[in-house]
Amino acid sequence: MRENGRSMVEMLGVLAIIGVLSVGAMSGYAKAMFKYKLNRQAEQLSTVFNAVARNVYSFNDIDQTSNLTNYFIKLGEFPDEMIHSNTTQSVYDIFNTKIGIQKEVYSGTSIIAVYMHPELRKKSSEYFDICQNIVLAAKANSNSLRHLQTYSDVWTENETRAVYFGDAYCNIGSRKCISRITLEDIEQLCTAHLNKKDTAFYLDWEI
Image 1 (cartoon, one colour):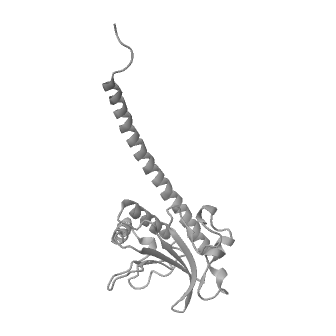
Image 2 (cartoon, one colour):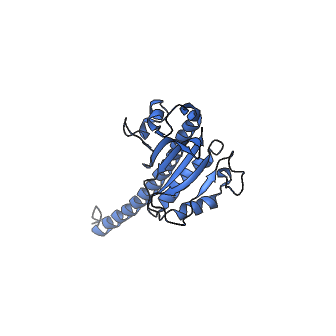
């Protein structure tokens, strides 16, 4: 007589197959979710940069050095998902990159500066992709930007900062243009900063 049901060996085999398939599915989901977050970050950065470019001439009467983040929040320029507090001096993208907007005077020129501090600062492929996303978002706004710069709170002597200029400012001497930055340039820039603990990005628009 044939017995109904499955043997223990067969059941273990089925469970092993299910386990392998589950791991693959989870890995695929994680990659898809990260890709989604990169796309969402690009949208959020574009929102910030476009808001600054659109309102850059509205702050002539503001004090020479002022945090403007709350001004932009009150103007309704940022989606609620980027605002962590009604009294914050910063907003945050989907990767928790801290973003602050400030009016400053640099060498006699009034500017609106955007400071960005990525949360993922460790040597990882995720950090590299986020870094690349930021640079590409800046490149898409090169027609209004004054310049893009990387910096560190713990910069060492003789260390070179990466500086790229916007369309109206880059055709002077040996200045590098943001609009002409290549994927190879971005790879070198982002790779150079993977091991720096406090690397951040600085972008500005001239008033």
